[in-house]
Image 1 (cartoon, rainbow, N blue to C red):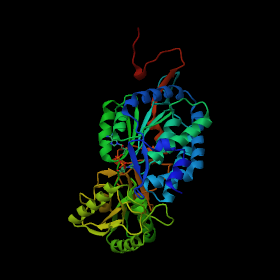
Image 2 (image 1 turned 60 degrees about the vertical axis):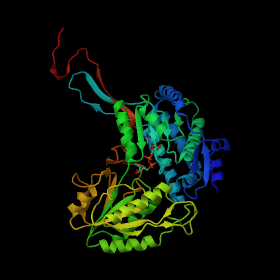
Image 3 (image 1 turned 45 degrees about the vertical axis):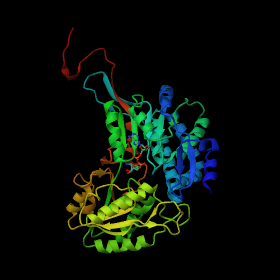
Image 4 (image 1 turned 120 degrees about the horizontal axis):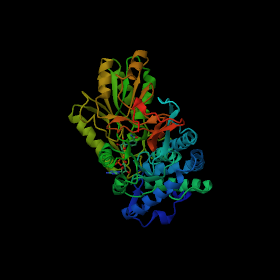
Length: 499
Ligand code: NAD
């Protein structure tokens, strides 16, 4: 299907797509998908006021009823899955199955959030005072600002929005300026769910179209108690102090530098498949992409040989063509960053396989790159830096403790894994002395997490957690309540204060 047909199917009219100042191009072939009208920063005040008004009404709607809105959103997403998945491909360059997979992730989080809407529970706690009951309750915070990156243009919004909305908060979304079309499509899909829901307050979702300045306005606003920001560590470094200054809460989902340790006992066949998917899938543009392979010296050469063989046959090209596994990088700057990182690695003693620009058999004007394998003598500065492209650095080790030290010795702490059939290594990897990442897997690659677990990472990855488990707590405020049903007024800690 053409981009025009897909956009029309998602309710984007030519008025939406023409006459604006934000030019959106497809990474597939550089074609212009639209010229969008940007949200003027002067409108922020009115948007914030509407969001605050929506909060006043939405916070008193029973949570299971709020869940009904998300149930309807899940239904609308199921109906729009093919079109939205295709638009993700057009706008972010993902292969068809990954575009569809991203929408499936949205559907999954909606299902999760519907169940959650009946489980926003707190504890009851034993009181030290007779005739007293103590408990904790969870309340919505107010408008949640969601800043998202280009590489998961729709899933990240849904992780945040589905949870924030069942928790009782309106959402103000600032999508990446590289992927505003998928955001507008989601806005329309959400609008259809709202219509069917019937009596939701106006202003539950605002979608801001434009660049970092809009994000900055959102971040600075005292009317937005929670900011969930997904993107580069550089962006997180700018956002976090501003939110901290006004005592807001941040959920930061920033860059990763994910590793796999492959032990001498590993099932190499499985390891190769996991490495290839997680290192080259989404053309290396996942926050959880495998970037460092730490292989035991006894199997390293064999593993690298098998990987080179697999890499040599990888279909690179138009992501909408059946059979393609590697689509384009998002833009020229990403291609240039990849080339610069490979040059840097070479200067540090690395041996590079692949990494050239592909120009034959791919759409002109797209940035198509061969994925690269780089054998490194040590974990150098270049290896410690996240380059958002398909580069896999390979390091050797002899001792498992050394492998864990290498895995942890980077500024980022998102995802990690070990391939081993040795139970001692597997268990050690998951202990306090093992991986220091937010995600640690055994015999599974570092990318492609399920929504049921909390997602996020430590150190420069920002410390935020989203999606499953108890990540919902970040969108609520906790209140401790003590109720005295006796006719005495005892003080805690035995304090006497008789008047
Ligand atoms: P980016 O940092 O360039 O942009 C992300 C978003 O932040 C955009 O919407 C942008 O407009 C906004 N922004 C930029 N500067 C801002 C500022 N000062 N104040 C407010 N908003 C600002 O990131 P990108 O290139 O779109 O995405 C790639 C990066 O995102 C990679 O580093 C990747 O690892 C990371 N990422 C992390 C996760 C995660 O869950 N940890 C998920 C996806 C992507």
